[in-house]
Amino acid sequence: MKKPVAIIISLGALAVLLFVLLIIQSNCVGNYYMTKIDPVYIIPNESSLCRFEVNQMNNGSGDWWIYAQDDSNYYFFLGYDSLPYIVFSRSAAEKCIGFDKVNVDTWCGIDTNEIVFQVKYRNIKAKDSTVIYAERLDNEHALLYRSNYPDVVFFVKMSDSGLYEVDSIVDFYYDFTVYQSEADLIKNRRDVLEKMDGGDRLRKMIDYGMILHPIMNRFAGKLFIVDDDGIYELSLSRRTFKRVIHYHMALDIFEDCNDDNIIGRLPNPQKSISSSAIRVSFQDSSFFELKPNGVMNIQVVDSNSCLKVKGEYNQVHYDYAEGKKCNARIPLCEPF
Image 1: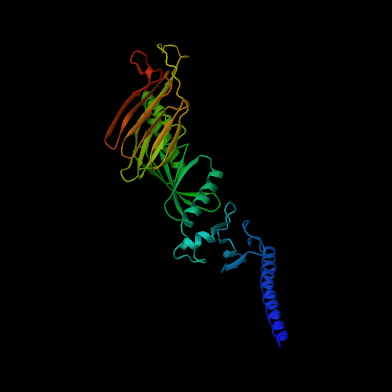
Image 2 (image 1 turned 90 degrees about the vertical axis):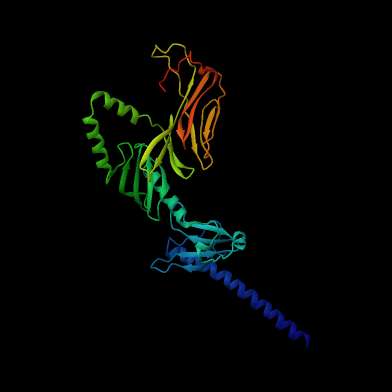
């Protein structure tokens, strides 16, 4: 009597094994078939043909997956060449309260709107090297900052292709003027320069050319631009674009500045803007940094240098001259 029972148990185990193998085999065959009929249907690099299991397919005409999983991760399909999908580990999912494998909005720490925006921004930068900063306004629109227009911001509609359509342009250099196209911006600037007399025109051109190698980002909740000799605050609400800090680092300072070949050198500054500080450092490790509470920290290392910082931010006035070469008897050979 025991043999029939043992045979039944063995057959049952064999049936379970065959069922598991059938499921695995069906994943392999099904995934292989889908990759052949639709090139958009991809298997993530983190997975494999037999491990990959689709949770939800696209509802439209295309045959690709939207949500999927394997034994290690969950996947959400984006479809961009530079970022085809998002990976969310099973270990992270176990710690994520309210996690739903077919609702990416429940995946803790994943902001698909910001991820898509960063993909579009990278695509734009790849086609337009003048774009050095972008800030998302909504899922389609963004603020762009371009290095060839140091005091202008572009409000644009972004696309997946790396192109963008200009909605409006705000020029802070000419008293917060709004334009509808780049052509209007260029024409107006040309007209303004032509109306100036020689001296004023030269002054305007020098002022405009002062902003070099700018970077832009948020600091203390506001937009800032830092260039090679100044820190500028950009306020859309107050309609202002103003320099709040003016800095100058000179090396090898000479007593006589009459010779055109003898000038104080301004080292190429390394600039950064973060939520905790705006920091400008120099090649000799000298630096200064502005904190959100208005505190200014300055350190000068090279004894043959002079770092001058002037300005006013948040009603705090700054006027520093740090370094042994800042003696009044030894002039800086460049204007400050």
